[in-house]
Length: 300
Image (cartoon, rainbow, N blue to C red; front, side):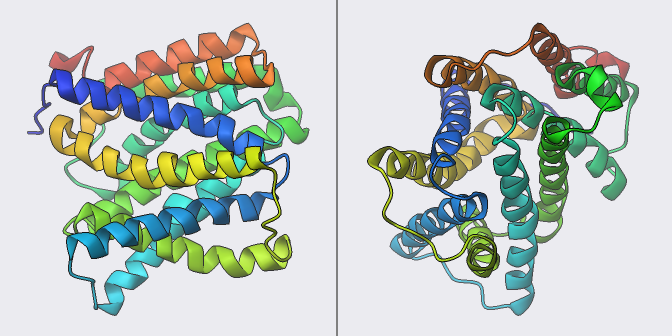
């Protein structure tokens, strides 16, 4: 039986910091998109983060994998955890508020439960999980707006793209558990970002053209934030919190991200979300708490 770790005050603090960092990433990405095309913006994210993490790997003198199968796993992980979700969500942010994007991003945990149940024998769907998943889907549908399912305009397409990114994250989590679980987290993250960058360099050149570096200071600041802090730094912090609090408690970070993104979007970008977005987030949050075991644990 899986056990739920308790969260120490230090773990709570680092979990809150992680939520704050990732919450700010939605604003920084949207700012960069004012001057940088979508694929190039994603390339900046993986390339600079990759350099930082490999620098740490060499500084710690960690052994570099030589098995081609591991590098293939890095490539697949890069596609599932970076190229596809970053690309879909970044494009989605051109047409969807950063706050709403962060709410939809919280569905990652819901889809993760479903994919894990499909792939792993020890992750069966219990009554508690089914209730949590159901509330999660209801929350997503409410946040998007049920009437959006009757039309198919650019905004609704962007929202579906963002959800597609969360599904890709869910499959990435399963792939990491099966193929990368025995590697040091610094190696796994650096290798994944290397695979992502190798795919994104030709994609950016073909889709966006040559990468331009003559950018406004605010754009470079946004890129530096989402690449160095919200990607390289956040990955390292993520694994620290995972070791301290466990995977179940780490899921709670998805509840901390949207409030940060919503406040920053309203403050800096003058975004205004409809009331249904907050109702949807409340339902989604309740579903995540149930999945986490904060409610209804005895029903398993």
